[in-house]
Image 1 (cartoon, rainbow, N blue to C red):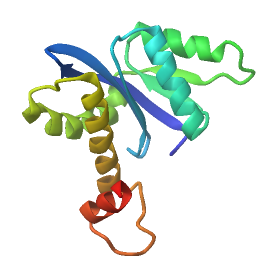
Image 2 (image 1 turned 90 degrees about the vertical axis):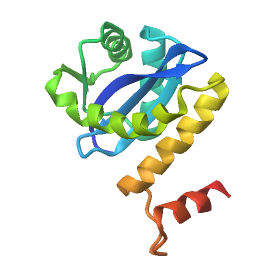
Image 3 (image 1 turned 180 degrees about the horizontal axis):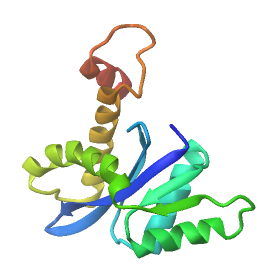
Length: 156
């Protein structure tokens, strides 16, 4: 993924209550990472950023909306660093991630919510992986498989 991330969270209904799916994409629209959490607070945002940085490396800039918890988490992550991550709070620059949420919502809305947090985490992982395959993030090694065939080959 690229070094300029757009990060936002969206709501997912589990057992009649809203839970938070943290997601980020890079400037090109490639999915950086995702994490389902019960609360929308500094601890959840920090856990998401640490997971994303561990798996994808440090970004140069992170664009977020006006969420105070995301800003507090990034400030806490930047505190011990010599070269801090640049944080931008520009709503219009997050249109990329807002449009990317649409694909996830399109799949989860007909489900009318999930019965358990565990099932939601598993199903959202599959939906996110399939979305990444469709976007062309996971190559097939020149085999020429369809996105569905590629997903099933990963699931085996």
